[in-house]
Length: 639
Image (tube, rainbow, N blue to C red; front, side, top):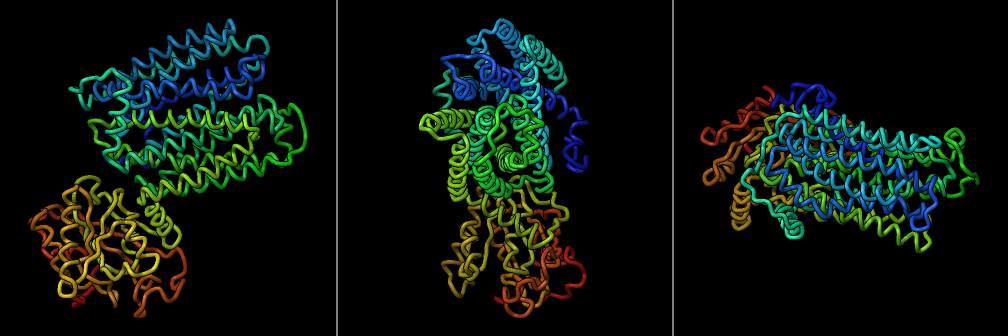
């Protein structure tokens, strides 16, 4: 695997064989899925008059049929991906796609709706088999610094493929008399091209070759869900992603009918809305690497959830009171100013959905055990399918109850706010990282130097100088993993900050002579953190600096290392002294905007010291070197 610094950004991955053939294979598969499905949906919505399948319900029925195999066969698919070489699985799945598309081509040629519905189910099976491979492949070939960018590229590629597939499907099927024939040829051509690119995907060896396949989908589904539940953060992230698919399914299934019945547009207007939606998702996905500074930044998830609710609710208001019209062309549609607000809402809600989903996928890939990662992804697909089926049923019920499509969008936006709040309370790490994300991009201009020294796996102790009340917040933002902090018990009494650190499960500590029980309990909890393979942060000065100088380092680190010898990573916060949260004038948090906004703050990170070479004086020397020579001699810190 190459160094994380070998390429400047996520787009450079397209020039590397470990990523490019896989990217184009999944791109063509997603494009073909949507060319076929959208052409079929438009055929039923605009061209055929079927008593048993109304235009309003066509999108829901086709969507439900497509995702049903995810619910039925994802568990088996996850096992196959863990047991066999992923590249071989990809090639077999793409061969299956050719056979399905030949059958679908015949269905379009003779206008056999039942055959086409069967092909929708079979293409869902094709995607079910490909799903675990898609997300288990990436962490096998990309490192932590590349994972967000790689996922962003895949998500962008997927939705651009959805966009192009749906536009092509809509335009081709709308051609009088011969449109269905062109769709048939295009589906077969896309499948053949996808099988060709799959041939160049590099080998991805099995992660669990001795796995015994359980062919019972029911028992294996429950087994996969139980396996995913072993890591509660991962499992709840699966629920968060599944909710995003619930949310997205509402809009994707209703856009054709929304275009026709609410916006009074023709087939091209329906395609335009899908273009806007897909472009928004693609831009949001690509923005993740830029905003996360090439790390897995789950602080973007709450930001994404907020945007999803705000703009889906505004879409309801934007859809009210539109001027009466019928069969508007694209030119006529975009000529009306009111429609631009509708398109802006669609673009922004989908952009924020991209910011919401990509970090969650990257988190699951990063924190799942490699030996059963594909089965965790399969559990994700099972939950996604379940949520999407519930979405289809729920939207159908709301429409049967007489709600309009804009009212369905309003209900979805409000539900998203409630569900997002619930998830973030269950998994406070998302909320904490969001706070850290805001602090390091709005309050400060935060830069991390040599962040590759922060361990991405395994237990370690981080030691840092203690300058302000937000030191822990900045360190949270710098690390791709959660950090457990040992902090002065008095900080927990501060409003807001105290609540936040309790939410972060920070460990309170008091001087031994003041409260021996709290002192000993702190070290017991610290050892448990390291035993679980997590990161522990200690501020060895024991208190915030009152003069901006580096204090004497106490022996707490040595006490922990006696029983748990792990690497120790020295770190130093620079340029934070003098800020609102520091004690520059004797008392912190008394003069807002002391240094304005966007003041520059840095965190410098040193290589880890092996436990046998750690001493308080050695650690202080390293931190002083990171700070610079102006720190002077040690001062005596408060006991």
